[in-house]
Image 1 (cartoon, rainbow, N blue to C red):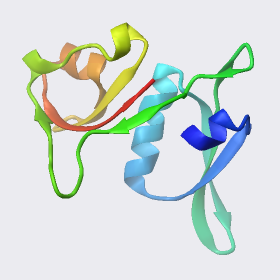
Image 2: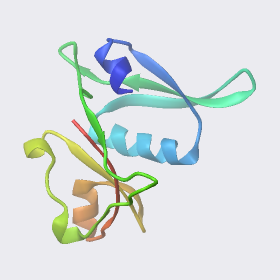
Image 3: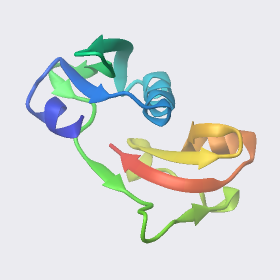
Image 4: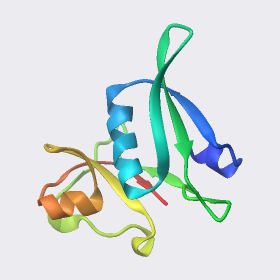
Length: 118
């Protein structure tokens, strides 16, 4: 998604998974994705994502993966801070589902930090 937005593409197609769909719901709520739709392509489910732009500048300019398979990073509620001075978003996998850092802080839950986006 980062590469597609920097290249100026209006949409990107991703292989479908339930986790990707919930992450996209979180990104749509925060305004990083305009809309997304589940479709079928060559008998396989895919997600077609329409990216958000502001004045022809992409909303997604950089992404940083926090947790990896080799090293999981868990964050407590008190350790959730803003990303890039409030211009970015932290996405967490919590017991209440996949939430942004702001929503997780509001819900008073911590969890595994998946990635940062700005």
